[in-house]
Length: 596
Figure (tube, rainbow, N blue to C red):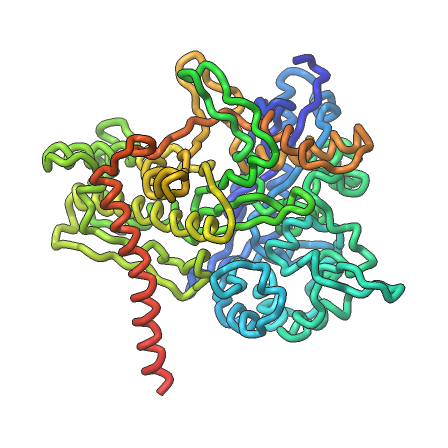
């Protein structure tokens, strides 16, 4: 590539850090940078934390400047900045409140203890709830409307946001914006407005209606054009002030995203949706890794479930980034966090870290080695046989989906008095991975039961490199060949990290940051060609920039036989579903007692 080829920047604002990556049009990483975000946590409630949007914006600017400087090397930074033809942003779905007077950041609201607000909203039975999923169509704590209601009750009235241009994705997924809701226009005709006035009046947020919804980003009718589909250029690009602070050029195209307002940048994509963008376009290696499978059609995206797995996990299929297409999203409140919790609270934790240091391995390799030793000693064919009598229900932080119940709690059944050995920790670790896989199956089954046909799970994030978990996901979610009444799941796709002599230069970019950069490139393409948005354009960008994947098939797929491990996983899944009903029944019994 020449020194004049266009470059693109993706920015990810997570819960703990702000990251930026500079890449070429084919996804090749040139430079990446990350800065931690300051967090103030409550001393009395672990669910409550706050961050400063001013601090976040400062970290973003520092990371972007690092990318430009790092890519320039001994060359001119201004030359690199002039080659940046697009920038995109994604962010966690925390809610930022901004002072109207000067735009200074006041704080970020996490999920907090919002059960009361969520329950009140769910009790309204509004049509809006039909579009948020769950068996009983419920909003969950992580969505923005319960947070806004909390803000109204607990913060000063002068706090508000000022910008109106917003991403259709963030409004739809988090702010109860429903584009198909009928809404009368100024001339008296019927149209679609997105906001349900009655809903907001009912839940006690009538101020939003009276102010034209400007505080959450779009005004009915007047500003309908400012609800932007993913990748559409936002305004005239970076403002002079934002460009100066980022070290880029004024007017650099900004791609509308797929949820947090950061100063003048109010059009980012939810980080999980950026993960969808940077994951599901992957083409798998075939022919022994020497070539890629055929280019997938845009329609095939509807059969690809993105599994964005980090501290928590989001499951996304289809997307409102494609006009006229709806997104279905599932999620697990704690996955990576649950694994870490199980390890860090176990008495054998210190022994695990000591052994890992002595052997020059990471702790997960030591746990996998321990499981293999136990498998050989007990003469069984799989690790699942080792943990057949150990059952974990993983909702230690409430259930996000498919039952949308924040009151669900975790449980462990099958413990012994051995709580100090490395062996017991390894078994608990594997049972935790199994629980995560079984809950993923419940999400896949629910999606398929509502009309989807999921053929592959595309996994990104830190958990994608856990080989045991990847195989468990493939085996647990597979229910048989499609022609024989099963779901015909082909398997799990994880990013190819390459081997000796064939490491792909795109693997250094995280899926969420890469997805944000894709939005920047989409904005550049649309502005350059002065053309209308088309799903095929974004899909082609996704398939070109996404690193290749490796397919992990179900162990028994196509064999015509059902292994003992698969039988155990299926039985564990039945127990998993029973555990949900038992917990609800026990909870109802206790609730009745306390109400009497």
